[in-house]
Image (cartoon, rainbow, N blue to C red):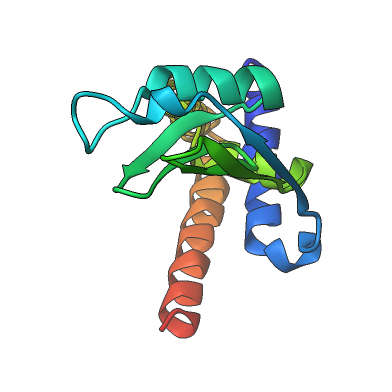
Length: 178
């Protein structure tokens, strides 16, 4: 029963991942403009900016979430990309004036759940949860398989059904996967 909720989560999101087209169009995009301190754009290194101050400012003013996934700095502008499950924000900042354009995209609950299933943009701690879940589901599966050996009256039938299930999976792969 410990693995019930996580098994249900991964089973349901496996279905939503396989049929992503059912959930298209749930994207919500917001655009913002503003001006931040232009001094943050000028550091002793011409190819760097005060990244911590920029990120903190965007998080505070626009409630940006997600991890910083990329920072690109060139002579004219700085781009900061934030990503999280079902979420991304992209800021483009003029290095001379501090003026910026920010686009925040939210992709809906199903996208959040799908990203959690895949571990995309979720960080190392969620990756540990996925690994633990996989190990727990493997243990539950192996426990069920092992128990069939202790049921003398159902052992042969259970093993035959397990073999048929494995054979059907292989045949589906062999026939339908290019």
